[in-house]
Amino acid sequence: MHPVSFNRCDAMISPELMEQVVVNILRTAVTSLPSDILSALEKAEDLETSEIAKTQLRAILLNVKCAEETSIPMCQDTGTPLFFVSGRCDGDIEKAIRRGVERATREIPLRPNIVHPLTRKNSGNNLGVGMPHVHFSPGPEDFVEITVMPKGAGSENMSALRMLSPSEGLRSVKSFVLDVVVNAGGRPCPPTIVGVGIGGSADIAMSLAKRALLRPLDVVNPDSELGELEEELLDAVNQTGIGPMGLGGRTTCLGVKVDLAHCHTASLPVAVNLQCWAARRASARLFRDGRVTYSKEGFALD
Amino acid sequence: MRTPLSEKEVRSLKAGQVVHLDGLVYTGRDEVHVRALEKHDKGEGLPVDLRGAALYHCGPIVKDDDGGWTLVAAGPTTSARMNALEPRFIEAFGIRAIIGKGGMSQPTIDAMRKFGCVYLAITGGAAVLAAKGVKKVVGVEWLDLGMPEALWIFEAENLGPLIVGIDADGDSLFKKVDDEVRKNLTQVRKRLGVE
Image (tube, rainbow over the protein chains, first blue to last red):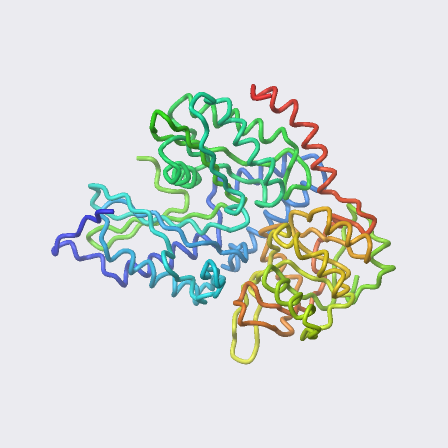
């Protein structure tokens, strides 16, 4: 990681502002759903014919409405705090994010989820070694963009990676994705979003799969081959009948998002990262003059 | 239904039925299962009496307001994580209902049939709705396990809708869906060209 430093004259983005923005986007993310997710859930409720499936989706929709009206987290699992920072990255961003997460945990409040992996001791403030995690993608923009993805563990626990043989090709990629979704059943809180990362290396594939989950549902991969694969996999997964909460139905999945990276000639890594229906995300852009703009839809792919 | 539940009461429930719950409900997920069974093995008692109780697979968000706890959000966690410990838990403590999401595996279903216990499915992620079904937080034990893993005692009032996902005859909605999915898979694989 090579953070690009601000020039001294750029020091308009104060650590306090950055911290406040982190609290703001966390609050937005955990208390309201982006419109693409909400409308997909509404469509699903319409599409289902089984009474049990409809009951699950109605409960989800009513819950989302109540959460937004009362500014209460829609799910008690307010997730692992994952951040994606791009543009004019500065090394101090990480510190501001840590302070923001600690404050948000108290003020919103978030559930303190972060524990030592072996002793299981809970830090009580969602901070720990390597947590919150920040992905940096420095760029030439005149702003810094911060996106938060509070990632629930129920869906994250169903993630899987397979290092396929290159000779097995696309066929085995499709088969693997289907297997992961079927094996997960009702556990990841379907209807889910399925993030798929193909290529790179073991870690890159999973990172691609996770980042793909940030792409709005209505944005198909511009690579037509991948776009078709997304559609084909979505159709297949929804034919399984797993349904909302694994209680049967037509909507197992709201969207499949695939991204790829080129890889070693001897490798074909494939990663699947599942996202529960509470596909929470929110972003902000901080400009050098102190302006801040917010979006929970993700800034258009401009 | 009101807790504590009798064996006769839970044995009369059938998979697919919708119920609501009143009375005390105890949260317990991974760490509560581990600690409770450790104590049981050593012959030590628990701080709460779980006979006839409803165990909720839930790690809530609870606010510490001076002098009392306020429940913020309380949806279910994935029950399958408790698969390995649940049969012993049911036998040791005599719980009559498990509230959770995603269903549980055959050894747990067998224990439910043997000892008289049902699995009640509540919508995953619908944490604000679930909290509306809790009148108050009565108390907490083992808070050293952290907020999500502690044993919280809730007083439920019309908690639900809860779908009887697995009944005490061993009938499981999840298993039915699973069988259906296995059947559908042949066709799905064919369409995807991966049979």
